[in-house]
Amino acid sequence: MRKLINSTYITLDGVIENPMWTGPYFDEEAMSLAGAQTDEADAMLMGRATYDGMSAAWPNMDESDPTTGAAYFNNVKKYVASTTLTNPTWNNTEVLQGDLVAAVTALKAQEGRNIIQYGFGSVTAQLIRAGLVDEVRFWIHPVLEGTASVTVPLTDFTASFDLVDTRVHKSGVIVASYRPKTVA
Image 1 (tube, rainbow, N blue to C red):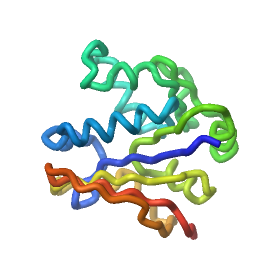
Image 2 (cartoon, helix red, strand yellow):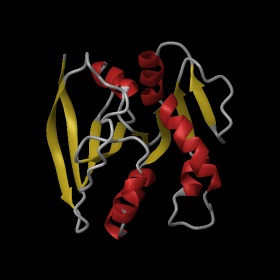
Image 3 (cartoon, rainbow, N blue to C red):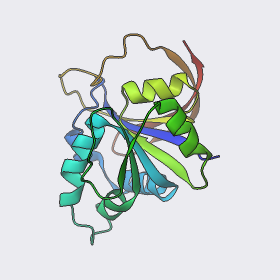
């Protein structure tokens, strides 16, 4: 069975939206880990807000430059959890129809490598509740943004996690990887 890996960039004050603040910290260590994540994944899952942001940015990136990741993001199979998106324009994108949990359960049962998900919001919360997220990786950046934290407040969601790995980069970024264990 395929694994669903969530990878979320976050500031010290909990901001995940519009992660332009990651640029100064995306050094060789970060590129290596990000590249390993995408090498292990042949599909990407996202909610509508993440789709809107990524589909506006990645098609404008230079796919011939291997350091950008654009070739991967523009060509990987993409799945969007949305009830309002009907005609996605980003290459190789499919909107999941019907029940999200059933759709992701079916995706995980298919042959293939991992499914990567970026960002943390209501889609991730639903999938953690259903026991479908195998690992959450928080890339904690030594930055304070001073804006609203977590794009979509998850007021009715609680979960506990087991730490499975920690990497401390020379840049100050800490990548803490967790496995969900208890969901309420």
